[in-house]
Image (cartoon, rainbow, N blue to C red; front, side):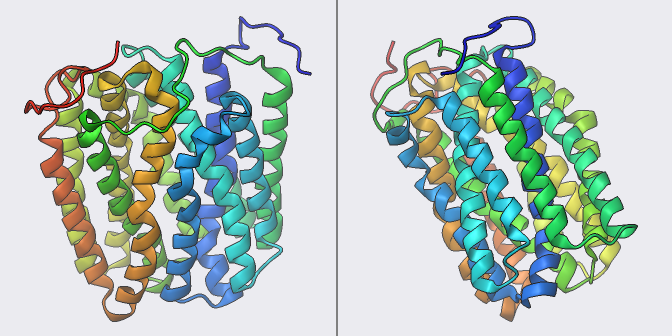
Length: 400
């Protein structure tokens, strides 16, 4: 039984969230950076196989609503750490199974850990942070993750470019470090109590409809770019694993430098303005990606997309402002399921579209971004439990 040690000083919830923000990108970003080159070089993947793999990767996200049942028998904090260890295990095994079905198998293991961890981390963050500090701290956590990613990609680029280490060693190192950090978090931190007792049932509320819609559209739009933009860089423009890693270095350098400031700007200007700016930018980026024929311009668009993605924390802070504090844990699973409804279907379906037209895939992404832009206009200037949208609809009242 773990000792409840030092529930003060550096052993506090913020420090734990920071460690989680370090551990996750070590494993997941190593997997993401090398995946496309690995599957093409070692398993001869085409757009069809990568689409199926990415759809399989999103199935655990679709099933995230089951989180609430898991939390009946295990504490959120403990489950977050366990999920991190499972993520590390899946990444560690990836390099040992360079076949189509082997990669499907290791991807599912990795994905179960990743999606449950992300859902629980979001819930814990919203429970442990006040509404006032959430935008700043969430931005700071994004910056910490980005700095970690910078270090990871720098090391990965060096290992690939100068030492030519085989893929399996890089996967094993990253997954192993994630597992070790999970063990440290399990043994070294006390279990922190929630400020508000959480609902133990699935919660779907009418007054959260706009949050659900924004979450759904975000899942569809983001998957198109995550799956097919990186694949385009490899398949069409012939980017090597080290070149793809260099792109990620640039992306996370921006996030490290500006993520906390972006969180502050969201707090200052509000969620509606932040998301409006993001979605206008994404409509332009997706449309341009459908037209691009130059490798350098494609790389610029890839970096630009990640810049806009930092603004997505506005959806989370919007929900925190309108939600009943008791709904955080239940909603974490529900929102991830909603986010992944389209994410499960889109990669496999658009993998077939990809064979016929690369450009059409990105034009569909632009349509999703445009729909998100329209939906964001319903966010009020000052969201609250009694003012969830700019237009008043009769729905169940907020619980006290």
